[in-house]
Length: 95
Image (cartoon, rainbow, N blue to C red; front, side, top):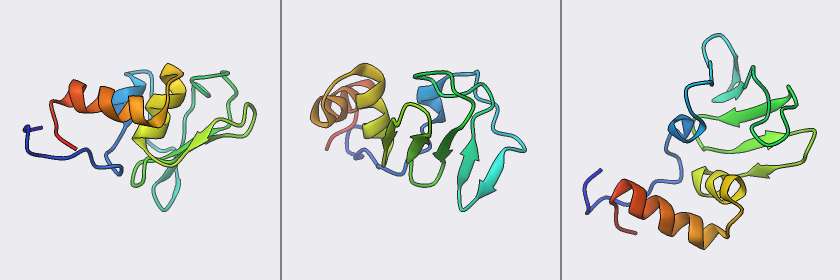
């Protein structure tokens, strides 16, 4: 990502989740998929994420968000603003 690009809240955030995410044949519809290994926060098997919008939801621990910034904030226990700054730095992007 060049330094002139902005963080798109609809970026595919699978890179944030790591290699353990097998998304093949787990499609539910409209971009929603289920994560077979479970929620990255509580390991419950009913964790869903949307590859179009970046939204995510665990029906067990009630962790949810609307885009990759929310996921980064929940994963790293920081504010949405801190997550945005961290992602800008990580991707060498500008807001």
